[in-house]
Image (cartoon, rainbow over all chains, first blue to last red; front, side):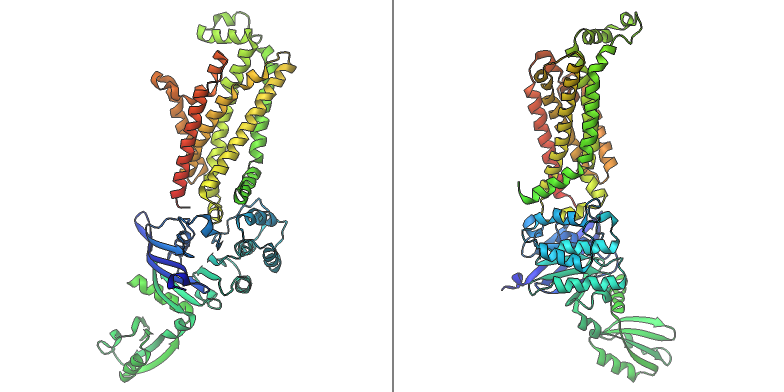
Length: 301
Length: 257
């Protein structure tokens, strides 16, 4: 299988401008078939705009997109028949019943699996005769997941699918996705602004900030590649010490400094400990701190 | 019909039930009331008033008093039917796509494996079907009520005004569809269509442009005068409707949802 065939999603220099402002700016994305990819970024980072372009709902200002080997804009219904989509707002036809909306969507997909639809609806205890407009936000998310997963699509795209859910509902939701959707050939692409929400389920994370992909890592890499050092110098830090290779962020914190280090931890620790310091501590970064670091770093940049 | 199209047709039909009830009932009631109202024509005017009316008003009124056929045609095709079909074209057409956008369901619908053109054509066809069914029902109600009230009309002759009325409706609905695709708001879409309709109305006052006066064609007055359906006007309006429909599709295909 060639590299292109191994990719479920590929974008090249993908950009989308609104009134001259870039919502997505030169995005190069590669999502492998069969992986669970977390697309993480703060609000307004360009996640939803990217997903809308992946689904063919919005036209890129420039750049290329390939979803399962086809351009979603020109690929027509055949491409979208292979994509299950759970939207951010869960807007559906409020007058339809749960059973009714399943009956509306089912004929659109040649691969619709009614048994799977029933199973997932059972897991969530969805009331089949209730109108969509009467469902809670959580139930609408669950229904959206049923509709997205029942066709057994090779690609499941979810845009902030658990937004507004409580932690227990969030965990159940993601567990169901992982249990029912993820087979060896099924790819999941999910966006979130909460890194810790997806850490249990994703294989890799791409962090998008201000429309640009700032890093792609596994969760393990994210947790280990960046560390934070808290240091209190005796007086001012020696010149150049805080500008050395590996230091990607420096924040003043009271009398000390909070230094973010990437890749060259041992060298940085060695040089800091050789300087006159009162205190020198190595701290683990939480995933949220990692995200904040990238988001903040981008803003400064 | 493909299963995808079938699913969309069923959805649109379901969403159109209230439209059919509203338009159908209203047109049936108005159509059925024309026959019984004929006896009141003229008799409501105080003695001597008719003679005092200006000739441009007196002439048509006298024609209607003397001929039931002219009366029923003028009051159905020339007044009630075209006004209500125009109104319903705007009310129903404006929400066809803008309604999906404003209630947030456009993203849900178009993320599914359906073509945008397929959705738009289905919405247009169902809306036009509702208007056509209502118009036919109202027209038949007018003919039946005429017979019951002692003024039987030749039903085929009376139905011969419908092709022009429906072709014009198809055109007006397609114009409203364009505004519904362009605008993300149903009210704005209706306002845009209304402005275009005003412009069309203005052509009545400019002799070289009078052939563009859709509302004139809609009254099927030539059919009344000649006894023959003006197929050229019908074909022209249907062709124009097709152009606007294709234009709406082209805009929608290129539009961000």
